[in-house]
Image (cartoon, rainbow, N blue to C red; front, side, top):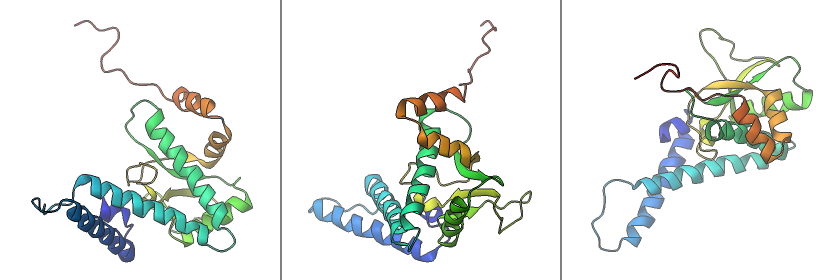
Length: 196
């Protein structure tokens, strides 16, 4: 998880390991003279990952000119992805990418360009989509470093259209729950017409 959430960035990986070791040291002080565990407790690991993820998201605000707007944009994406995985019935995949069409506004495109430039969004590159620098259309996923903050798995999943995510953001909480549940049907384990 730590390696995946570092997104291939050595500095980020060192920060994660440093946080893990610092929190482990604090935990050992609390244990006094009890047996010192050679393994970092799961609770400490979770706290370290959540701390680093929140810190990464808060760094966005310090970017000049677009910092606050980019922070709101990333939170909008993360909140939609969180709702998709936790509010709908269990599915086979999660949404962790956004899909852009030609109708993306200039302001949104500037935010996406800045997010890609600063390492908060990445273009989805595959054999079917080899374009490493898409222009005003394409599929992008959130940096895996933000996955713990939104309680997401750090992996590339399905994508949702940006227009759908913006529409979801403008809904009330009640409308959001109804929207997420209406779009998906839970698959049954057994054929309803079959007999035992």
